[in-house]
Every structure is written in structure tokens, then in C-alpha cells.
Image (cartoon, rainbow, N blue to C red; front, side, top):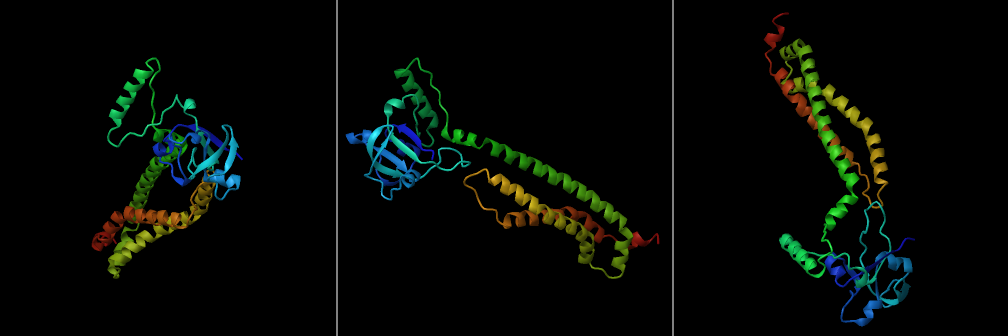
Length: 272
């Protein structure tokens, strides 16, 4: 089993908003903490300890007591499972990187103060900074690209489909011009005309949705398998888009169907 090990400075948990499930954090006032350890829930599970605080373990920092158990959190992306983690004090190993949590609304002032501080103590060392949320966002770069591609091409596909459908409805209405007139003469209502013109299109869309669901289900499930932590596919995830698609179709054809249903039958039958 892969075990992650980190040397940290004081107040690391506070800065990173890491939750302690049991025990305490490292303290400058307690000398024995320099040899102590913090572990996460996964590490406690691996060690087979139900109450690990106070127990002794031996790691790369030597033998020491466990003083706290942290709630599990991700070090990597959710493509991988949370691994057992052990933390120990080692400020001498963390001097090249500093984690800073500025107050909300004071980011620019915090960056300026940090730059001045580093220039004062290490004038020859370049000051470079980056944001942790950006680092985590880069872990999901592929997913972000896929999301944008799906949105852009999805919208484009819907627009093209609606334009094609609008043309097809116009052609159908024109072709059935006299038929609609005859139906109105024989007492067909406005709703009957609308239903006559739209039902064929709705049936085709409904059939296409039924055919596409198994393929979409399989592709989605295959993609989700690349994540260690994922949602379960639910039926409503396909039902809702299907209903929305049918509504879009009905809205697209509504203009031409309403126009055809409202026409004067005398005009369509005068040549007969």
C-alpha cells in the first residue's frame, strides 16, 4: 500500500483548513512534538488502530507517538483514492516553500508584504508564488477541456438541428397545405391541427432518444470508471435531457404549425 509522508512546519493544519478528528496539532510549546506524528484516517485504518492517539509508530523521522488523527483529504485528484498520510515536524526541510492564507479582500497587500519580507531576508532568492486552487484546477485540466467541448459542440448541434427541423416543418406544412384546409372544413380544431403536424416529429425524436440512451449510458459509465470517487448514474439523468429535447422540438416546430393551423382554409382550397 502506498503511504504518503510529509514534513511540515507549525500551523500547517490551520493554514490548510485540515480537520482533526482526534488529538491535537503540533505545538511549539511541547518539545516532544518534534518526534511526534499526525496521521489521517486511512493511515489509522492501515495500521489497524481504532484509537491511535498515544500509540507509538516508527517512520522515517524515527520512533514517536501519534498525537492526532486528521480527517481524510485528497492530495491528488479524485482519479486516485486517498492514500494513508503521515505528517511530522521538519521546518528545516520546508524552507523553500511557504504556505500563506491571506485574509479575504487583502490579497494584493499580502503579496506585497511577502515580497518585501523575502527581499529583506533573501535578497538573492527570486520570489515566485502560485495559488493552490489553480494547482488543483490543473489536476482536472482534461475534464475542463471536455466540459467546454461538450457545451460548445452541444449548443452548436442543437442550433443546427433546430434549423434543419424548422426547414423540414415548413416543407411538411407547405406539402400538406390543402390537407390542413380540408381538415378545418370538416371541423378539425386548432389543437387537432397542431397535433397532426407535430406528432410525427415528436415520435421520431422519442425513438432517437430511446436508441441513444444505452450508448450514452455506456459511454458515461466508461468515463466515470477513470475516477476513484464518482457518482452513480441515475435514470433521471437521461429522462430530464430527453424531456428537454422534446420540448425544444415542440418549441421549434410551434411557429410553423401554429401558422398553418391559423390559415384560412378558403385560400388553400380555392384552386380545387
